[in-house]
Length: 366
Ligand code: V47
Image (cartoon, rainbow, N blue to C red):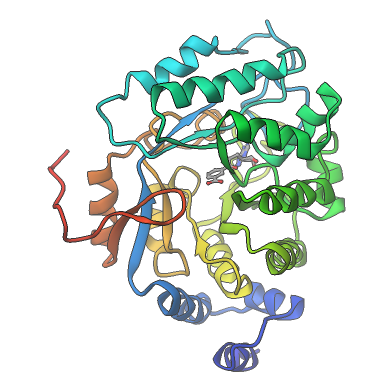
């Protein structure tokens, strides 16, 4: 089985098909796939590797959905291990970092059945009062759908109200695997693929950018992985609103799919590489280092990846599911990790504007 046909298509700037994608997953020589992905990565970004100075806030883990892969959620308020931050506590997370040149707050929550819509609006307004210039990348499309259903609003109204309160972009979570067969088994009671895509379509029309993730390494087939990428590619053809595709490695600890093994390192590298090759219209492929592990993220910079997310600083979803990475990396750590991989680090903002160019100001150690 040769990759000559796929390589020829890439040479001619032709799009890869479902069959091409499956072939890339099944091809025995991972390094041949990597070489193609690396060529596409370098064609777009040279050796630049992006990251940002961000913070993650997970304001509640109370969640009415029952996703089998989730180790973070607790069904009801008051259940053991459940928490919901008072707004003051969420704001304090930002306030205490007043001396950090943060550019982004990324919020992901459980689907809490009892909080009023005002909780989320006020959360955003509070962040903006504390740091008016900060970019708020908050709430997955699954949360937006949940708000619309719970508060009796349209998806568009929810997005518009959140934008008026300070929302600037949507993160890519909740996409999991779009195929109905997989969703029915692992996350049957939350927004389906069409609703997820529709919310991102609306967000893009309203002028927001967003990301798209794919949770891999559980029960999905290679065909379903490629189908997922093709659905993202099709929406991107319509709107151009996706900035990054982010494969997320399944973590099996403390959830209902714990009998499954975690994806292997070579699978992780291949998923990122195939993403780069299939998604000719999405500018960035991100390795979320908390999900891949730091060393694997570093290696992935030669397998199609040009972005590493950011400093993160606090993280529960992956650490409750078995991630053994630190919760935080400093910008110095990230720069060293990128340079050690033979790439050039660039600190970016959420829209990939350059915040700090490589040689402009060397970082202090630490
Ligand atoms: O949608 C939950 C995933 C996602 C597990 O947009 C799990 O920049 C693996 O979407 N094993 C939330 N994955 C995180 C997310 C994200 C991460 C980084 C950057 C961006 C971005 C978005 O976490 C969920 C779900 O797919 N997840 N549990 C688990 N056990």
